[in-house]
Picture 1 (tube, rainbow, N blue to C red):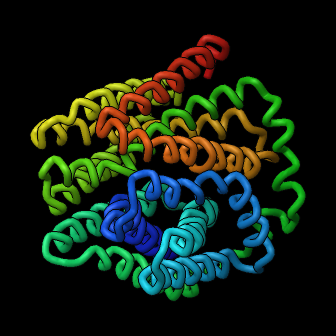
Picture 2: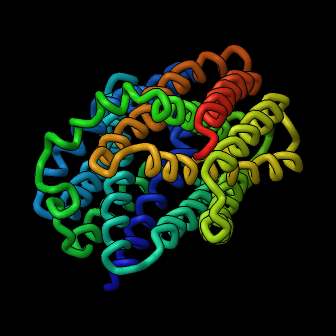
Length: 385
């Protein structure tokens, strides 16, 4: 199997699982009788811990000879934890098992990114193609589950996540034999050595915080959009279609706009500022509880509020961090955007939803506004980037 095909299949399975667990986990926990605040805690704890678990998993994965081995083990752990959630009852046990499942599943993405980037450089394919295949898979799984849930019990959500994760473990074992040590120099200490220097770099930290705040402003949407739309009378099938549409426009940006942007040599800052503005508009509009007809164009803004900001982040980190500190830079960015900040925002989102409903989106709008303000500060201080 070609390396690009193998990478696309791995991404496809990762996002087939997250395409169900991300939008519908809240629905499953709600079906078990948990409150919005309890759901927020379960969803947020793995995110808050990612500042610690991320580096720990990275160092653990570095101990294997081949990158695919860590991918297979993480997928297997996620599968077992998802399945175990169906066999137990109670907030405490679900908190522990979801922590394990979510941590393992989240770790698959940066490890797959590192794996695929190395294969892309080695074999000459474009990274965004297999990564985009993952987004297509997310759409399919999301829409399919939304349709199934119209006539099926919410337990199907965890059966799907467990089954797909188990399949991913098998597929990962058949991936190309790319050694870990060629990619990471076979040493563990340099992975963390540059963190202190990066954290003292004002330009780098301003850029990372700007990106992370905009990305973390998606917390309320990730945790409670499906629940809120259901309460508005929107069916699970339509919820799935709305989520799928948002990722479809993300794919268009990755496969069409991004190559065009690179040919035109457009820098990352216009993307970042446009994405921040789109996030502010999106969350402010969603706070008004718009009709289904208006939700479609608002979902199209996902291409900017998420995908454009994601692309801008990758390029900013590449430009601002020395090559020797690239891994530390990615780790720091991931810990903030996909860990600490979005975890805190998720914790806050539960009580906000319980007390204010969809008006809780206004807090996310404020967060995105702060991110955009930092982006403008960075642009003024670093006009050449």
